[in-house]
Length: 422
Image 1 (tube, rainbow, N blue to C red):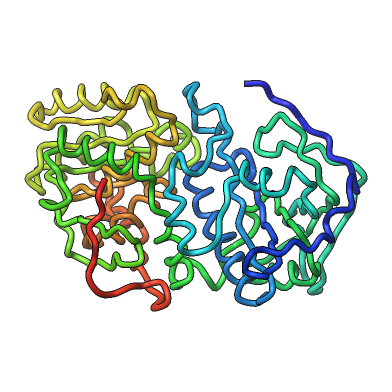
Image 2: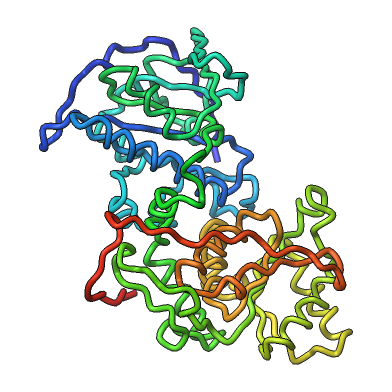
């Protein structure tokens, strides 16, 4: 991959005051954001929720403007290693864009460039976590900026760049954006600095955005085929049939049965250093899987892990413990995995894991958080979803966090459901 650092000049062109109207007579404006390079795939999914709700609030409060969220292309993230994950991957690789658009208007970055004829982004704000005690916005304008811009090698001009001291939730930023007046496009870099605040996991607003994040139909189909072939699992038998429209999915807790397998997410590599008190040894993990499998009457374990050595080491430990009847299954070993990016493999692990009869995850892992959310939306009982690996076999560690889905009437449809066709 050719990496190019781009120099953006202050006030390149004076296009930011153009008032371009759409067919509906509304002024069209675009909101862009980016996230610190070191942040992982699953935290970035949560940052999307923050900015999707920001666009939602902007469209509620600015009746003469239609704000569209521009989706940042996926670069080669810290945890992505294979050569198929080199970057500039559109969101449609992972998510169903028509489903996202049912919540707020969204646009891929290359579509944004085409719609605006690569005109300069009006204002870019690099957000800094600075003290914010006097209620005033802090801006520092510089004459030049060297930016990554999603890893794109071609030049993307901007009209104005500023540093922004911020300590705010997404809704608070509404007042700031409105204060800019008519503006064609605004970008916030270091988007992870924005917090959910009042609209976190306990709020209907958070859950509406989360519900709209439906995985791409291609990945859901691959997962369904894998489950049927290797895990004897189908949506009809498992009680996990989804309607075609996410707004019609409102499964009662406990209604899902799940496939006849235990799913386990074992985060290892960086967690051995970052969370040593919560990360089990391979031997401890194997013992916990044996105990859980026996108590559930399940002999198949679907394993999702970031450690390429974990499967063989777990298999060795299972054999030593006389548990040769327990079968480990991984999507990464399937023929379909050979052509997929690390991000696609992560989502497939989450889809397959979310359909299991029972799930055990890794404490403090955003991968585990996202998977538990999927299970809650499908209707699994929380008792089957919140278990986590303990450090030691005999440890009595607390279960993971669980937030029950919340449903806004405006985004929840009733009546006859049409079954999703994959």
